[in-house]
Image (cartoon, rainbow, N blue to C red; front, side, top):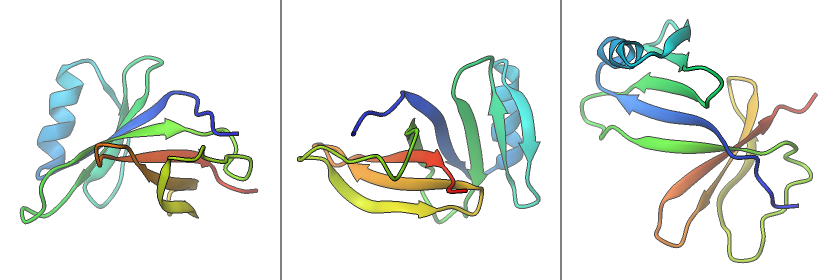
Length: 115
């Protein structure tokens, strides 16, 4: 099974967590939580959540879409999907895999953590 269930989240990195969070709040997003290391999650209605993390000035800010996968163990990418990293547990309680599209963009696939 290789089906995803649409966009789960948008992951952004920024040089200033506070300014980025205020910007999205001004656009109607509500802060769901903030961490103690300059990151946090916002949401606007029932849409995908937005997770923003601050990175050092030496890193280029990035944007990555995160696609939802219902079951990591049942997920089998079709031939032609380049797996960059297989599903791995994250520190925030999910499993994440990355794949590369034909133009070289990296996509994250997120599944619930194993019980």
